[in-house]
Image (cartoon, rainbow, N blue to C red; front, top):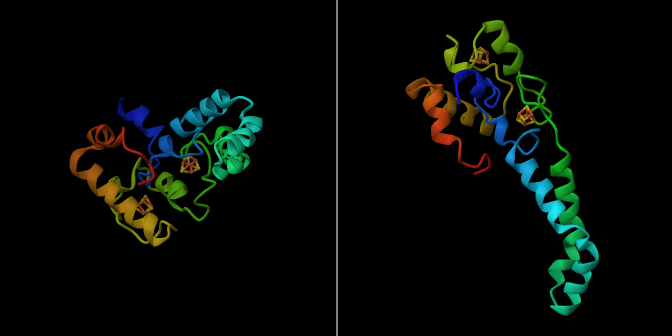
Length: 151
Ligand code: SF4
Ligand code: SF4
């Protein structure tokens, strides 16, 4: 994937939109949709299996299905296309445009106190940007492209 394509996946803060559960073209959405399709009309079977197998876990299937339905319906186009629904206080999205940089590590003020992030997200963003600065965006993307977003 080249630099421009990577930018459609990585937000200016470095967070991997492409692996976010809300991303329109992400694996989580795709697999949730696929699993939901594969399960078909499992609702009535879940009840049956709860009895046949004496396994009360199957009684929770409607909740699991609700989560799958939610994940299948997400369609965020990523931070560079629209405001993030998850990190509503993010200031990086508008700030990187003002600073005319693609990623925070390219900004002379990095690391700054202007992100609007909580400590957890701030730490992640700084770590990611340090790594991108050290090895380059393309190499960084190769390094993380098969890793889960949530770890
Ligand atoms: S902009 Fe926010 S909600 Fe959308 S894919 Fe990126 S991290 Fe997820
Ligand atoms: S000022 Fe901070 S948030 Fe804005 S682009 Fe620079 S490093 Fe990123």
